[in-house]
Image (cartoon, rainbow, N blue to C red; front, side, top):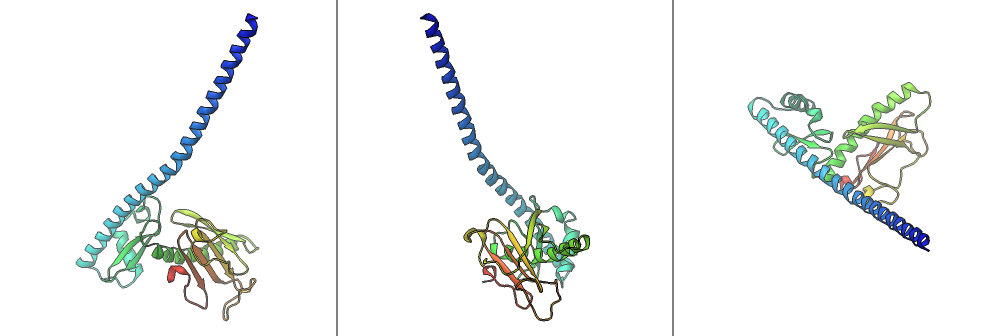
Length: 234
């Protein structure tokens, strides 16, 4: 009888130990689930703060140069001056955001981060235009390296890879991905002349005649025979 009670006590302790282990594991999982989003928010805010400080330094430098000796007539000239003011401009944003120059009302070009600027519409417009330029070059390289037309082309925008998918007709995407079912994050698609439903007078076969870029908030759409549209432009 004594042996039976001993076995029961051991089994009970074993069951308790397993229950405790399971409980501790669940607690650990919950802590991870809570901590990861909190860390991402902290990281983003930290990078945004660093980016804002860097943008301010760049803006102040451009203003000083403008007032002292320089009258920029183009974005290219502004870029040259910004390189002189900040030689490490490519790394100005801690998160790798692309730095654009936009002429302000006072005539001075101001730096804008494609990842952190508070004007989300402006960010979407600038990123969409830059993505289309990068796509043209990436598509040229892809065609040089392969005889077949690629189904998608990867570019790097704001320090992150972005897959641009080839489509046969415009996707049902007119707003940001955050309010559009079936899409998530940042997406980009393009259409080629003579491919599917895409046909523009005067365009050559294989030429990009349609491009769409959308982030969580806004969408920018380009047609070869029209101006940019989408809610990023309204």
